[in-house]
Image (cartoon, rainbow, N blue to C red; front, side):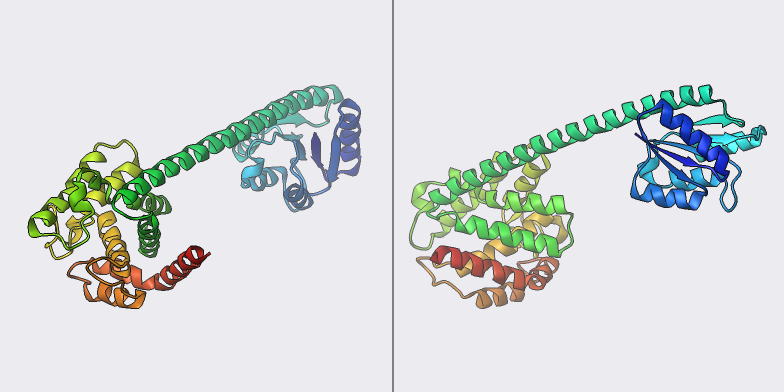
Length: 347
């Protein structure tokens, strides 16, 4: 334990220090004014402070008031030593944060008893604080493990869906990453951005309900087949409906709305403008951009710059202009991600 004595009278300070040092195994720091004592506290926190009321420059009440402004010293016991017995002075000291009082001249036995009680209180506080930190650390670790498992399940499920659609998982990874870039550039909260990043891979989860003959058809779909393919949006929203977590609710919004268009000509509900959930608007940009960049049996792959130009051209029609603007602001990040993906594929 570390005890701080703040007393301008040299003899009184020496007496206090001797009594404390003989009574307890502790470190005693002495200061003759409040300014030095505050500077000392900033470096090493004390466990008990004895402070005189009447001192030049800064009295004991002002010292306590300044000390308590620092949250680190909110619970450090402070004993004010004073010959003053005026009620208003005592009330002011209590309001400033004084824990206890000793009257001058200080009785050594009373000092020992009060110091022992307060040091015991301080020790209990420190043990509780240590226990709280340990529990917080254990909760944080458990939460982190749950988050990691949640992410793993989502990615494995999304890859299974992508494999059934003839892909290898790269599409969902790119859509997720680009969606997160757009969300961040739009200034959404970090937790919201994370949920969009993890919800985006499930945007086509409803394809599990589409017949293989349509899902894996190498040529363009007929109008009837395309209408059946559109049902994957409804299936996906149904699969993810009534979720308890924010993540699943975001994933549901994405699955249900990523084929809606800003001008109202999308599907399945023909929503327009801000009636479309922002998560669906964001993923729509990322999904179409990556689809344009991929080779299909009925079309060659577009280069990223061509796909970007098409996204910009469709701002206000297919896409939310705010999402397109965010996509543009994050373009360098998108390019960096694509380059890293290409390098990983080559490796």
